[in-house]
Image 1 (cartoon, rainbow, N blue to C red):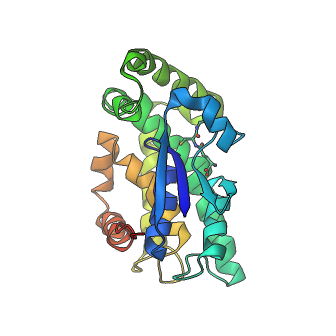
Image 2: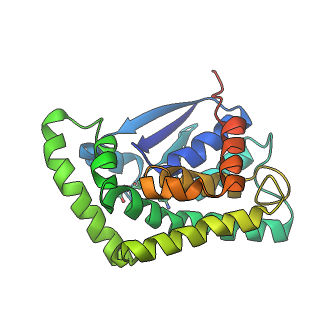
Length: 232
Ligand SMILES: N[C@@H](CCC(=O)N[C@@H](CS)C(=O)NCC(=O)O)C(=O)O
């Protein structure tokens, strides 16, 4: 059995869950509370989640998990064999994981109107006594982390410009195609989708996405292909 260790509301969960769904692989989920960090460190020494447990082995980092899953469950491949496509896939996946991730964090949890809406969802599984405190601390921690990274220092106007550029990049990559690479669903689609799905939780970005019907249709296609969970 596969076990996916996760934090609530993480885009990386979506990337891996949808990969497993597409391949028809059943998995169980364990959601860890922020307050359970000591226990999380025993599963994932970096403290980062998701982590995938399979046959006594633990894989951390969603990219390593994706390549592990592709090898362990080769049915319905999501990673192309062709070297050029593999290179492009890596570039797109890393753009999603290491750039779009910080945008979605800033947009969802630090912009006016969206912080109030999304932080409660992030902490909904925490012990009630801690929620009051976390509701105040988490936006500050995320502002600090994203300011250190850089994207958190951008003005709202600049965030809008950048985000539109990211959405347009996907619209341009799609062109007339249904998928980003190789005319089929790949890990590149899932990695970018995971971040764009979080973009939707920031109201002004949800409205921006709606201006790009080719992008919202692509998101809907991914949902159709990857939402059904395999049963044990
Ligand atoms: N590159 C990692 C990123 C994972 C990540 O940053 N996870 C966040 C939740 S979205 C986390 O565990 N944060 C807790 C921490 O940084 O200690 C991946 O692809 O899995």
